[in-house]
Image (cartoon, rainbow, N blue to C red):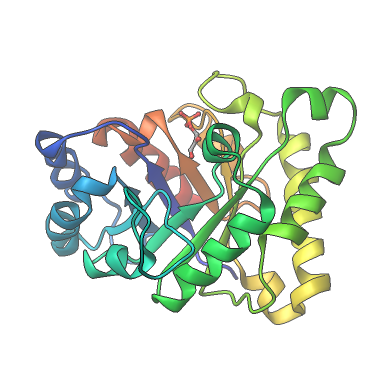
Length: 250
Ligand code: 13P
């Protein structure tokens, strides 16, 4: 069984005062065999977030990393620097970065290798646009992104795949359960075909896009959904905690 993961992507939201939300979340977590909870704050908060989250067993992740380990890359942050803050994860290939910075599958693959080299677990994002879905191209797009974004040495512990339909991000629109099942079953089959039964079946698959406390339990009914990558609803402990509880109960 893949491990359950509830990951929060704060995107470009939050300053030091918002770290109180991490403390608040820590007091609302389910007992013991709870899902792994990961919060991905903006880079300037990584170090302090690690200190606040650590005692609660909450893990920290970055939202991006550079593919190179050091060098003349003004404004960029390497995976080793992220690991140095105490973070364990990095979200890579989020659609907002693919769109705004032209990140390609090849870039995401390079960044994934860099994350692994620094000991980070990569949360690799894939997802189709609304036009892709309307044109019935969803599985082709997802298959291509998956093939291109993942390096060959994927294991069930160094990589998490997050399926985030772009049209569902920040819109309040969510695919229906059949659509979520179809894509996640497809991703699982592709992972097993490429990486073998043991790794492919155990690698965590997350759904992302307008996950909220009132739809989380339905989404987690899908057999190949092992958790969620949550944007807006991860900013407040009172919103994120019920999603984590729904995952724990699934
Ligand atoms: P929302 O949950 O705000 O739709 O964002 C999803 C997302 O992009 C997480 O990475």
